[in-house]
Image (tube, rainbow, N blue to C red; front, top):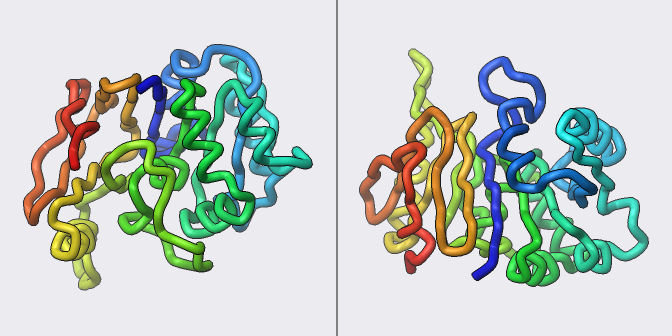
Length: 236
């Protein structure tokens, strides 16, 4: 398979600027030129403003963008794109819009043909099997929870096991444990802010300064940073 994916946990790490930690990865993954940007996850920010923010962040590495919402035919825009990026925001709204504009299959086809794909936060979440392990509130109902299925596992971006003192709500681990009860054979790759999964064909690595986690079958195991983790690309 000729897929080339960069799945970022987040657009920021700590007190960094917008997309700043990801610029070297984005430069290596895309090179220079125009990027087709999908801003559909933006709810409290307009699409044009979202595009302006991304364009400003990527300008220093020679990447220009055009928002898919500016094309009269979004499907044709995907077919002509040299690279596709999907930004963060609300995962439910993002997936609902992808279905509304009939973009699920065109994006899958483009990735299968080797078009580079970049996602961060919600844009990474939808690369998995479904959006059932998103952290977001279901502010709108998409036709299905089935996502792009560019990889054969679930994703949980922004993963954190921090529990504030005195907090009595469910932790992230408890929420993922609930998923495992109902879907014991489906892996969840949880990636912390400042890290990303790089996927080239059948090779995958978690890059960054922090380890991730794999939740599967009621157990969790470490996903070592900067090590090959390609076996999860063949998980069933």
